[in-house]
Length: 108
Image (cartoon, rainbow, N blue to C red; front, top):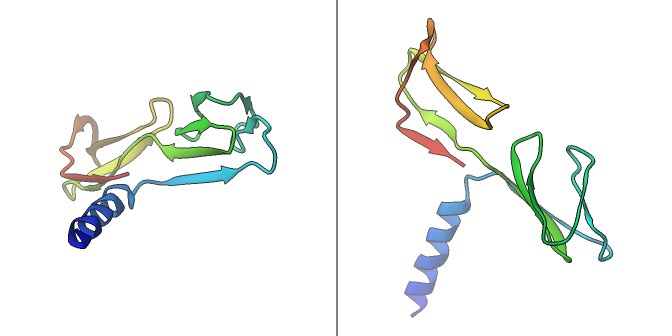
């Protein structure tokens, strides 16, 4: 039983270990203030801020996580460029932006 619990915890750590997330506790039961955009959000609300973080507000806290994966393995003649408007990376040839490259691994 202990082995199953340990393996489950390890898998959860690996699955969530590479994503960029944070949680902010409320000193009182106020609504949530997005530190990036300065906007206020009611309890139960979900939103994506201008840093492409998916956020949620609860009575106890506000939590935000990246909504995109960061490419880590792709051909050497390619480059990963973040498209802030669409909240995703675009990987293309360094010398020709019209040619997309295959991504073999991402984190986040």
